[in-house]
Length: 229
Length: 229
DNA sequence: ATCCCAAAAACTTTCGAAAATTATGTTGCT
DNA sequence: AGCAACATAATTTTCGAAAGTTTTTGGGAT
Image 1 (spheres, each protein chain N blue to C red):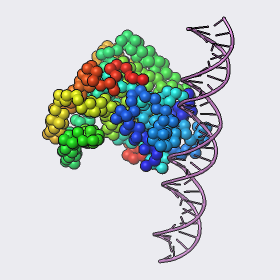
Image 2: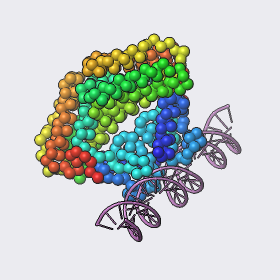
Image 3: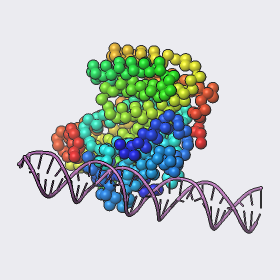
Image 4: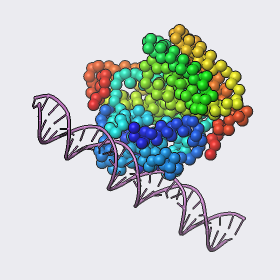
């Protein structure tokens, strides 16, 4: 693996996890120290992330971590619902036994990790399996473009969920585990309408939860309207 | 504008227009001569285009123009229909007079250019106005994510249409101008169902036309199944 | 004090060469 | 002939310095 690829993964990781705060300037000298490499691989990574909307770029004024806003979250989630319900229908239509088995396995692994979520780094392992589960649901849709957009949107929305996950004090008023179970069941039953409805609800509840947390000022990481500097 | 941005635009332009053939290796030494700049700005542009799926990249083996295939076209168009019908509905719901006027103006400019399409570079001007028209239709949808995906998919599918446009000998069995007119009319009438149906038809016919042309071997640029090397 | 302009500093962007890796070609052996 | 081992060439990747741009600083005039 080249340094540029490592830089891409490290930066993407740190931006999504919020270790590099939204709006923060990404100065090459700083990044060079932080990641222990020269400018070239870093600039390449930044350009890729810019194309993915995870960083903003301004000519001759460098890069910044892309800001967060409630409007963008709503937009991203509504686009996710559009893409993923369509992909889920296709998957349900086209998926074979292998696809179904993948969902069962991903759900099982996800639920195992829920119990260990309190462990150090348990949240990160949970988050990884969460992605694997949602990817497994759509994986038989047969559309590389839709899958690519799914990956982009997942990363974009993950940035908003992380502060909630990290803030363990927040009361979790949802049984997310049950939602995942019901979603998997409807999908494996090939009940497309029900599965899509559950998926849509699942996402709308997430937005609601984040929106409420912002209103109650419980999340300083995600600014209500505009981005932090 | 920086050199890297110029490189990005020039490469994107040449790939979409087919001047850099699908599958062709993009060697830095060649590109450096072709565009008259060093490696750094070129690599940055290539990384951006890689994130946009217009070029493929393999570690330590450089970049290539992304291949074309009928399957990818069908996938891209079906995704376009999904995104754009949704965006069109939102635009019809949210668009104000300014939005409507923009459509009228873009359609008018597009039709003016149809007459001049035979002139040198007339096709490129036509193509530019075609993009502006379709963008104008969706521009009030209020979703930056959907607009970004629209731009991506438009570029991806434009690569398939270019060979058809350039091959003037092909009989044009469609009245594309009428299709655009009807689409604009339904949109301005705020008849979302009709507008979306027309938009869907419009795209499906384009796929059909390209598919037929490939079957009849009239387009050597677009390989039938797999990509050219 | 405030504003304006020049000088300095900070930072981004680009180049050219060095380092690392892959591809090519040649030789010698079976 | 076929094939491995090795050397050579071609190419990508990375670094460090130079060039160019923006931002900050400081002094002097109003």
